[in-house]
Amino acid sequence: MTKKVILICLIVISSLGIKSAFAQSKGFGLGVVLGEPTGLAGKYWLENGNAIDFGLGYAFSSNDSRVNLHVDYLFHNYSAIRSAEKFVLFYGVGGRIVTSDNKSAWLGLRGVIGIDWFIKNAPIDVFLEAAPVFDIAPNTGLDLDAGLGVRFFF
Image (cartoon, rainbow, N blue to C red; front, top):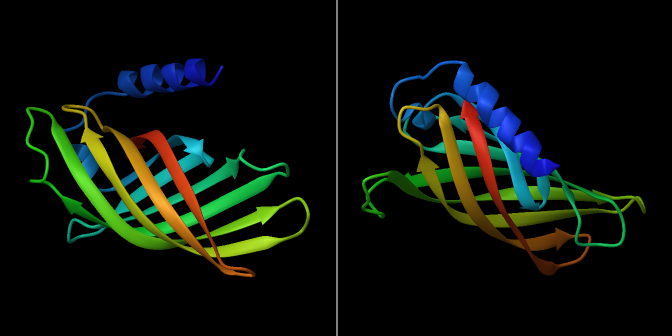
């Protein structure tokens, strides 16, 4: 079902018209991420080429329902990956809050690293990221957020 929804979204987005090449490196993008957590993914580019990225999703790895919210400040390295396509390495730091059905909440610090694929002549990027998390409250611990996503840039 999820694959069908993503395919329909991509078809609708592609029918909206084509923006300039690599339009994904400016403005605001919104899409979906599949992984841990699964949900909405957004990115807002800043003037200096860095970006603020956020996600709001549902975590499936535990026995109770968990909602995950994260925000990261990202740096981009455009020359790390040489290819005919535009692959961009990104990395950064941020934080996350996780809440669960049993009324508990966790606060954690994230480090994130990933790869963006800026699709030529389309306002779409595809990304793969991993984010080790150090939970700091109410208890300390280690966790990992990771996902594969797609965003449409307005």
